Image (tube, rainbow, N blue to C red; front, side):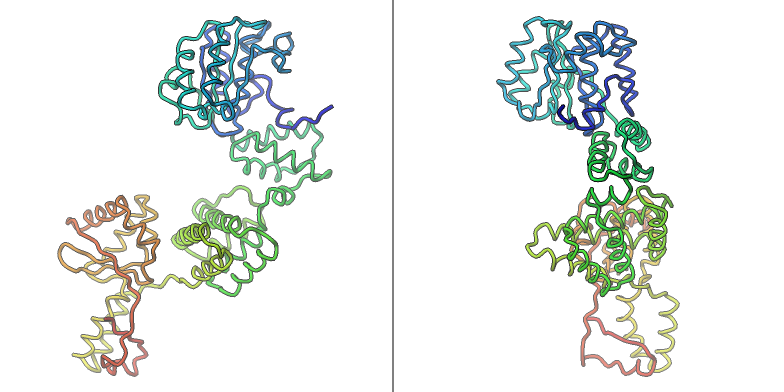
Amino acid sequence: MAYTALYRKFRPLKFEDMVGQEHITKTLKNQIMAGRVGHAYLFNGGRGTGKTTTAKILARAVNCLNPQNGEPCNECEICKEILSGALTDVVEMDAASNNSVEDIRSIREEVNFLPTKAKYRVYIIDEVHMLSTGAFNALLKTLEEPPEHVKFMLATTEPQKLPATILSRCQRFDYKKISNENVVKRLKIICAESDISITDEALHILAVLSEGAMRDAISILERCSQESADEITADLVKELVGIPSLEMISKLTKAILENDETTALQAIDEVLEDGKDLYNFLWEVIKYVKDILVYKATKKLELYSQEELMKIKDLADKAEKERFLEIIYQLSELENSLKSSTQKTIMFQAGILRICMKKIQKPILQSEVDIMQQQVAKRQPEVAQNQVKQQSKPVTQNVKPTQDWQEIVNQLKNAGKIRLYTCLVNTAVDKLNDQTWEIIFSNGLTDFNKRILEEPNNRADLIKAIAMATGTEINIKLRDGKAKTVEKKTDTSAFDGLGIDVNVIE
């Protein structure tokens, strides 16, 4: 006997066997019991959520000789023939490969004929959004006024691609992602009936990896069961689905947080020696940093063991949330660079080193600047006054008129403008005139920050936040605040002996 894949073997045969879509199955059962089944249905949702399964059950239910509470009996002659695919009155068509006008015209010709055995002739069209414009036009008239003996059941993952004229003629049902809890329950039933031994942790990982698609979860389970005759463990699942070693990911993340360039390069070398794809590895690092941020905010995470959660907790304590956000954006920028690069290894190494070397500078407090000014003034009041004025612009985070600048930046964070907040968290401002402020990037103005701040919506949000704080609409300019040292042009002898490093800014 030919082998049958698990997801086909355990496809639900009744509405009650479906999980996570009770809001749909209950309505359909009520329609069947009341004899008010529509002529056209549109089932919309993500992959593996039960769209085609629902269509097949409904096709049997409307034709069943002995329906029971809106369910097909699956025992009568009609049900058995539909299950075996022998009944020509139920037609399944894949619109991805049968999307031409001729394919739909053949349906238009067939619908005029009465069913051979069943009560209704049923057409199940999967991935209906793949039909051509001409095919949709050919289907429209038939869908609007079909014969009484015809039912249409359309399934799609992208309803926005369907013409409004088609959507308005169908009863639409939207499928939800199946919860991890329901996925685990269904997998336990399948494992019990298939004599598959699996740990609870492995089941949980399968549910998370499926992302709400039951078919994906069953497919991964089947692959794991074929790999090992013993108990399926969490480590086996991770290895088979290609999740990079968490030790490698954690090592690189820790090196970035600690600005440890040597360890970061060692971690990259280990990845290369292990034969992992750098692009996939980078994506896993981004997700890992995101998970650390989520844990720092909620103290909860799925997919990780207790030992792994302890590592995540240690990493979460090494930096503030803003630092993790900054790393995510920097890694995402590196990911975009890798896509167009022919030297991915070099770009990856250089990008990680740049992130490691970029440290968040601690802002100098106004009180520290005041003390510095007083000490300098004792030595040479006039020279010191001019020198300190020049120095104060690039190094001070709280320069007037922006003693409330950090408050403005924090308001952006509270308003959910996280990308803006991340770009501005380590900046200062300078008042050029009554209508213009200049934002100073003391760590350097990167292309990424420039791109974010030049987006019309982001720029409008920033100007609005400043206006709310100052009562005046202010124009903004951007300035790279990295200082350029001017040699042998200005006398800095007034600072000798004070232990103060002075760079005179042009």
